[in-house]
Length: 226
Image 1 (tube, rainbow, N blue to C red):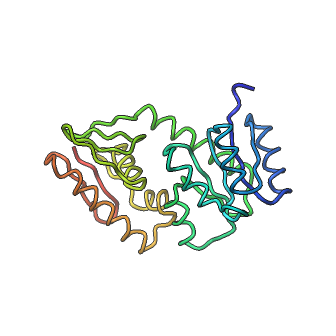
Image 2 (cartoon, one colour):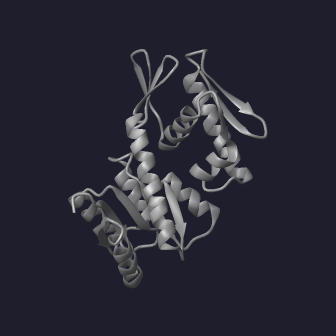
């Protein structure tokens, strides 16, 4: 039992919730099932799960609200949204409220399990690389801070995610389409413009060290040089 992964499932459809719960429990998960947003927050505080699977449309508090409240105190817990919505804006809203991934209903249990394990592995890697040296900067992913000498600046969740992926591919090309789909949900024109804005913000934050550059590789992506 102690080796089981603690997972909070917030799903207000009883039949679907029970199916997902039982399926996950056969795969070494210990599942806590909540049927609305307020109950999800109560269960989260009591059980301290390792991963969250949140339905977007729930009574009392929706999944976005639950994620946003949890993100105020926990920046690293993996969050997957379950949604029947397919609009790009809804997907973007999910990421902006702290989601790491999303699944559109109907979905297969195999896909959900693969995505949960992928996020858990990714968080494990990030924890092992909590403090990342970039030239004369220290980037703390967990605390979302960027420090230069004795000055520390707080990054937004999106800025921290983008800088982490750039640092993972330091001196190599970070594929533009990959990062757009990963952080914005799609690689359409409007999301690409949004990412360009975030790149500009990171460039301004890093300009104190002239040895660091974020280069635009036209048609391919970005390269963090340091």
